[in-house]
Amino acid sequence: MIREKHDLVIIGGGPAGLAAAAAAKEAGCNDILLIERDRILGGILNQCIHDGFGVHAFNEALSGPEYADRFIQKIRGLSIQVMDKTIVLDLSKDKVLCVSRMGEIKEIKAKAVVLAMGCRERTRGALAIPGHRPAGVYTAGTVQNLVNLENIMPGKHVVILGSGDIGLIMARRLTLEGAKVEAVFEVLPYSSGLQRNIQQCLEDYGIPLHLSTTVIDIYGPKGRLEGVTVAQVDDERKPVKGTERFVSCDTLLLSVGLIPENELTREAGIVMCDVTQGADVDDRCMTKLPGVFACGNVLHVHDLVDFVSMEAERAGKSAALYVAGKLAISGKEIPVRPGKDVRYVVPQRIKQGDEVSLAFRVTSPMCDRIIEVCDGGSVLMSRKEARMHPAEMVWVDMGKLDIGKIDSLEVRVR
Image (cartoon, rainbow, N blue to C red; front, side, top):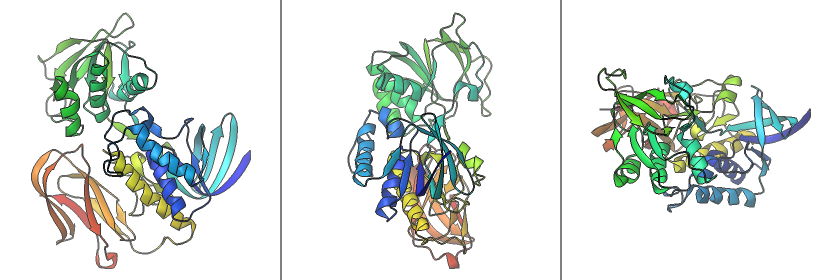
């Protein structure tokens, strides 16, 4: 087995991995290995040909490939080593990676590791939709790849289950390519995508969105999808009898959520957060395994790629400081907990307290509410927010915190 050693290994060459690698190099870490399983860098951005990326990071509206290229050119300019077409098979607690590249197995020892593996889509199997198993059932991201990169149309009459952003964007894309999108069905009583995508991708094209409605049966006895049965659901998301109806279609897109790719994280014994399905991290993006950092969609699913890059830059800089022996490991840390009407908060712990930013999601849509960050009975920060939605991340900048004077933080909405 071939053995290598590197100061910093970054797993994943998508937006998080690219930003983390560049930030680590700029922070003084010169021995960096960036591992990517695909043949090209950029990750999911390569198939996202619509614009809207980079508004926060570059003050421009870029397409996905354009956004990725900004970081790829930076990586090349910084002479960061890239190992493409490589799968990481295992990550141990002592930061030893077992990787496979073109039939060759390598063992790589790292002083620090940044986890930037991104996320994957939920499939039909995860939903357990009954019925036939015909051709024509895809995840929205698969169809995005087929249409945008392979120039293949999956069908002509489309139903979309779930109002996630990729599904909404593909509703517009398929319409522009000549398909008829019959409707989008969402099991929740509110949309799960960004409001701008509801407007620009559905309402502008006359595509109906049916809330509190789901697919309860898939029909395709001859091997190709012929239609789906949909029904309204109650407050417990159970089908309401008498509301069933059949919708004819030859293609069903599933846009029903994303799952962080954390198999390697769990194998390494890293403590996880049950809600985000990502690692438990501090304000430096370091997990509870010293020297292992996590960022981007592998940590928690983001709404905008700009925020992925910003978070990853923090992780990369922190990893570089760890390699240089300049990042504190011991000492006090304060827990950060979600309070009333808050689903989760990242980071889950504050260790350093410099320029702290908290990211959270609310449990349901709400308007004209007050965000509070509290230490026990003391309110450290209060801010009014006109509108909050579970699909959209909310950020709170706390500035520098004196963690010696704080016992814990709770983020709540009232």
